[in-house]
Amino acid sequence: MIADTVEYAEWHHGVRTEGAIYGFFNFITKIAMAIGGGCAGWMLDYYHYDAGNITISAINGINILMTLFPGVMFALSAIFVACYSLDEKTYRDIVQKISLRKQNAL
Image 1 (cartoon, rainbow, N blue to C red):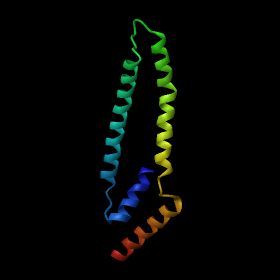
Image 2 (spheres, rainbow, N blue to C red):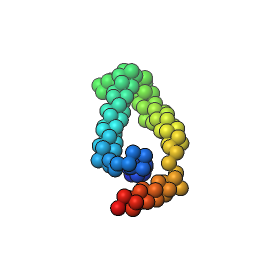
Image 3 (cartoon, rainbow, N blue to C red):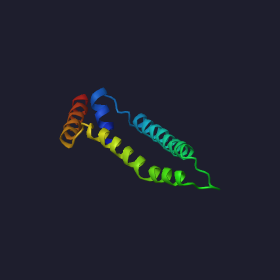
């Protein structure tokens, strides 16, 4: 999907900026990893996890952390993917329009 957005941006703005798009993707990925690690730490702290003394509350928290939390995040990401409007037909049309624009520029 990231590669598709390169062509979409080129079609929309008239300039191919794949370096900026991939750089932004890497930046967002790092932010997401930091948020994921932070959420894990916060949830372990919330359920009073202590490596020396593992309580039932901590075990329940770990179970939630390993099952429900990823499920909720997956559902949230599915909503974003469902809103992604660039389908195969639209992508092919965009690539064709870019190609025609480049031919006319020569």
